[in-house]
Length: 335
Ligand code: SF4
Ligand code: SF4
Image (cartoon, rainbow, N blue to C red; front, side, top):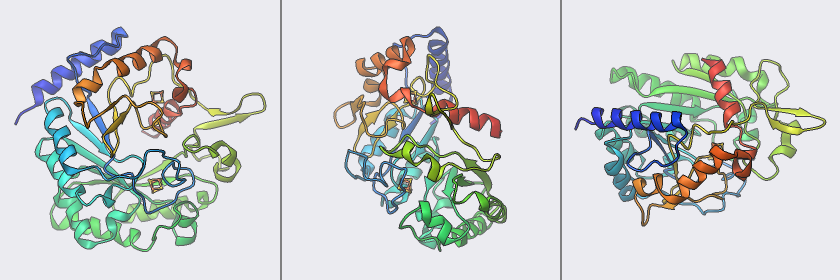
């Protein structure tokens, strides 16, 4: 299978559509896909819609058959998939089959885990042998007490030894992948441990990322600003607070959103949202139970949403408080 040419042509067509401001995407496919292998989680993180029990679309594992059908349809066009959203991907019993199926179609995969991937040594070995390209590991504390202040209910003990064992398996298999990123969400209660977590990442031979928290995902998120927002000046923040405007993203999206012009979000139950910032599935643009990815991508609902974002983004409720632009700016600064 050589999809290089069809993928290249598709990406060129999308770039031309984006630069012309067109919203009718018939005959194209997304460049990348975001999929949610599971909306179940074993943690109760207070700022996450799943952790706070506010997701509003039930808890599901994506069925392997659905996943395979998606990959088989999009492989000629899509070269990258992120396999996480609002749930722990490694709770899905088919996760390694999913990664392997994408890999067999020359699609790179990236997963974020809360540490569940490290619960069994055989899973850690599978992280290396399954074909996974990138793994983000959330580590928001260097000890259990700090870690569990946000990652409520999650075992801390397997994570750090798991990172070291993954490093060793990569050496044993002489494998450069998965590329491992240890990610710390910068919060008030863990900011003092930044150097400790950085040292753990270095010992694990992993990249270290410090990321800002998102307050917009749960109904009381902005009320928790003082509780969670770090105070140290070197910590990333995607919001600012002022007397007249309240708490707002530091950078707001302009007249077009890069996300809906290049990808879409497929939930574990097969419903589709424009992006992962639609925290409560307010804007369902399709359902893969009875539509294809191509139908939804260029269908009336998604086209109308792109048009509305292009014409006046403030008319789209989910975009008004979206912090994606602030996060993109933060990532650019990091590079
Ligand atoms: S581990 Fe991830 S999916 Fe689970 S509750 Fe926390 S943020 Fe949400
Ligand atoms: S919510 Fe954010 S990421 Fe989603 S379409 Fe709106 S601006 Fe884009």
